[in-house]
Image (cartoon, rainbow, N blue to C red; front, side, top):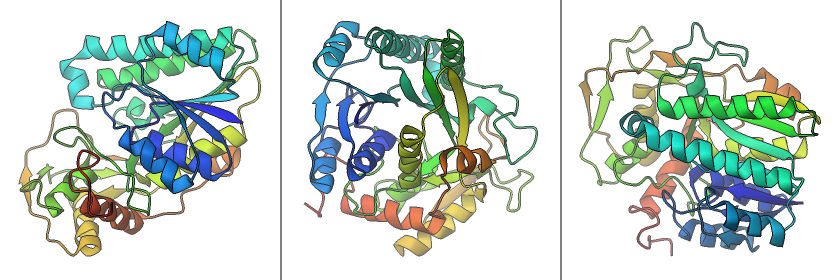
Length: 342
């Protein structure tokens, strides 16, 4: 089978592309490299000892996308491509709606024209907003609190509507929680542009000396240590969940949404402690005020993933911290400069 992976040079896309290759699939990547590096593709190919067909363009360019489908035969699509920074989405709401929605509509139109109707969509637990209770099941109310989350929710609605056409679409939305870690090889990992938006790469950059300290936003939440609790899922586990969704696709004319998480919550301070143990480095941090829109805790009810996909998380926070440190220490500047493992 040949799988088209949109946004395949990015953090989650690169790990999923590697896992697909390791499990015998052929992979084509389309990525505009706006928030990723082609170096990740070079490294994936070396790790898997297989070639990837790579096309650098934006999904909004429907003509180029049509040519890609015309020249290659795809059996399914995994759709990661899109803007993803929550804070930026608040500042640039129109930009996020334009990019994420138009690119997805372009992709779906071209898929329909070429009779490729099996898609796995990269959704997010962001759509749940501030949950009424935890763990969060797929049936929980959806109330995205920022434009990024709204685009995920709107795309899910589009996909859900498509299957109602009874036109043999098979659609899976994977709602994942907080991806962390890196491939154990240390060759690919999370390489954010500028200041990291996510906790673990921020901690990693403090440990490697790239940033001076971590800001902990609030220690007065109703949690066991006062800091926010999240469900951190190792990116390698997350990649395997996508492959499982390809192996066990949704039934024709069916839409399914599945949580991908560990079912366990870890606090900010617990992450700091785990990373200190993994790296042998002291993580300097400062408690500051809460950020607007942050919530106390959020973690998944992952039972449906086991039932529908035969998938469950196998790695823990210690694994994630060890692998993240392996990546960061060997690639202190990400993909932008050659690390000591070259």
